[in-house]
Image (cartoon, rainbow, N blue to C red; front, top):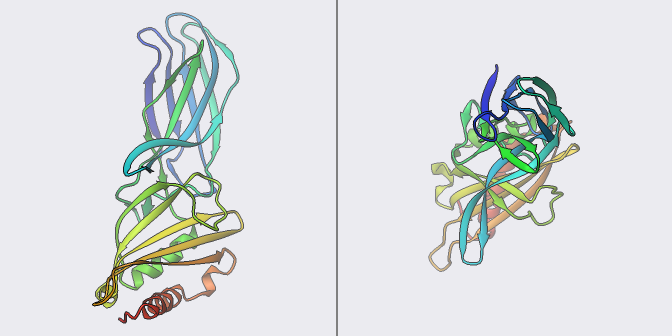
Length: 262
C-alpha cells in the first residue's frame, strides 16, 4: 500500500516535497519505511536539512482549563545540508523507528474515535522551516495489547473513545511526556458498579505495563470514586494466561472492597 502527499514549499517556484510511505500501518516498537522526493524549483537553494516526525494530538490541563494541541514526540533527520539545483531531483529513502510507547489508533480494523496520528515532513532552507500537513499513520496494537483488548471484549466491554493526555503515570517506566487512555462502556453484568473503564498501555522492549482505572458508581451513602489496578504482561508468556478471567477477578475484587457487588 502506497500513501502519498505533495507539499509545495516556500511559495511559487520553490522546491516541492513528495513523501511516499511503503505502508502507513505499523506497531509500537516497529518502523515506517518510505522515501522523500525533493524536487527543485525555479532557482537553486541550499537545504539545511530534511526531517520526518510523528505527531499526535494531546490533551493538556492548565490550571482550571483544558486544551488540545498537536505534539511531535519523535523525529529523525534524514539529511544534513545539501545543494538543490533548479529542477533537480533528490530522493531520500528512510526507515523511521516508531517508539514503543506510541499510542495505538486502530483496533480490529476500526479507528479509535478521538485519536490522531501522523507523519510530518520538515524542510529547512536558509533558516526558513516549512512543515507539511499531518499524514495519517495507523498504529496497530502489539500482540500482547491485543490479548488484553480481546479479554475486555470477551467480558462484554465496548469501546467508547480514546485520547492522549499530557503527564506521567506514577510508578511506570515511561519515556514519552504523555499517555493514552482507551475508554470502555461496561456490560450490563458490571454496570451496577462501574460507570466506565479506562485502559492505559505503556510498552517497553521487555514488557507491557497495563494500567486500569475504574470509575465506580456511588452507593447510597458514598460518592462515586476511581480505583486503579496495574500489572505487567510478559511478551513471552502472554498466551498462557486467561486474561478475561484475571480481569474479571480484579474488577470484582475492586468493587467488593468498596461495598459494591455485581
